[in-house]
Length: 598
Image 1 (cartoon, rainbow, N blue to C red):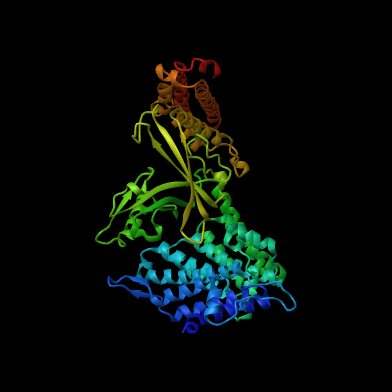
Image 2 (tube, rainbow, N blue to C red):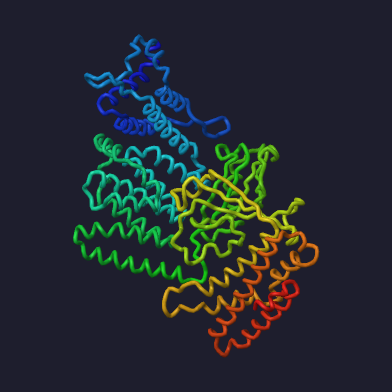
């Protein structure tokens, strides 16, 4: 009886032994078992209905999981004894050698990979009818299946294409493009590994910079899969070009033209090697159009935004694996905070039962999960900003101009931040002299745009800015906005001077006293009477220096404005000059030296 129970498991271990004996690794066997598991899951019922109508893992799936986990059980010697087999039955050595090739590390890795494939298939099946409501979960289901079947190119590509189709249905063009890039990457890696393509490792590395999943080395798995009859059907140069072209099209729909350019430049070597001059002409025409679109984005006075990002915290047992986890969601650029609140409410209200209700936390305060009301599931939704690679996160400046037009090409983000105002007395808002700010920086597992619409937060850090630091930051932000308009290089010779309209808009908000309460209120809060005595000498000097710099840049901008305007704008210019003079007079009550400085 024991032999009947343990035999299949030991038989699998015997296969592992042969794999070590002949191939010195489990790669080929992993491919074979992954293929077998995929076929098995298509025949086995992995879910069963519960009394309440919901789905759960079936008994067959549980038994299969147990067997896959026991495959790597180091206590197998006891099982060998139970079956009457010698304890050396699992040892593998080359002929004439005493070195044992058996590796429990590799066996555990194999077991983990197979359990991962089972879990992915089970999770996908458990979604059932919910897939049409919870699109993020559906996409993640396809993604996990694609990862689980990565050792078998045909299966890997199949699930990536299902994921690509799902994203296109949601009009998630950037995510769909990443799926097409991943498919092209699988094919290109296989071709480069066989040395039978026009691409090199440098081309694969270029693709990896767009889609990091491409960086996984799959050479051994591809070779093994082809031996088993899986993989050869799609691994051709023409197939790679097909999916590169699809990625190019989808990135263009997402208006991520820098990615489109990189993809197009990977297609050109194919047509060069074939001397397909007609196709080359089309490629270069397409590149011209792409580069013109890039120039248009970079020349726009409005910073280009390809998406909006939201931090979503899940708190409540009905969320299952999501409970007490934070994610960053990537949404279309026209999705506002109210839109995503409504969408997620609709998605997760359907998952509540009679004992649980859903509540939205609309602000960014710190949440202590242990203090939340039982029986209530909470979603905390906060708008976040993507962080540039070289951005100084400790800068006091407000981040209105952080995503400037000059940084259009940096569209890969794995860090995000949001600022939370607070006061020491517990209120969210207070006077300038009491207003603190907490800056929270989140890091995600992977970067956007990704193959999925949301990424889990793996790291969170925060720092605080005092009221005077906030005030200095506000002044520095206004100064930077004006300086950016005066000094930013233009894309063509006919556009070297600052744009008149945007300069007028910023100047009016800077020197017109009636709309410039910010600068004057800073002086009232920190430079008059008793508040000024509470400032440290260094803080006082920094605040005065920021105000003087702001006024100096305003004066310079007014001079530039005079050179740009025609007769029709003379009256407006006079208003700007009068406003600047009035503001200077007001500030001189707090900073007498401002009269001599200007």
